[in-house]
Image (tube, rainbow, N blue to C red; front, side, top):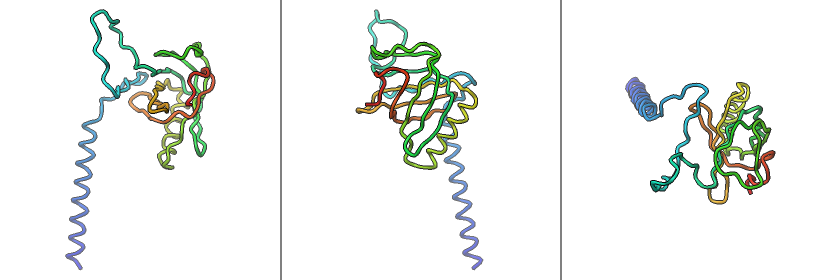
Length: 176
């Protein structure tokens, strides 16, 4: 019986060491932290085309991609969606012709809730915390196989969800 207890103890110790090694390796691969108040640049999923020498040297957002610099006011979750109430700070990217939002415009985004309950709860907690802190967010909307993917970022943290609907920005930013 004592041999079994020793063997189990050794296995648990090896498992703990392995888990520690994996966590250290993951921590070393994480990007550097960003200063409070600054937004980390979102990684581009595809490389951009090479520019000719006469092109404008300022980077342009990918076609169809829109970045909304916003202040988060409220975040709430229902069974199927997370709703964000925001005010607009600035827009980067080409907007549809029927969308011309002024600075300070209030708008609402509905995002599909994650399938996993614990993950949806954690996302809601994070967004509620950001709303309580009146954080400035970068909301990036990008088309992806007939859907609109939404990246919500503040500081070094980001969440990626599917857009279910938008109100207050014009009809050109709907998820349909």
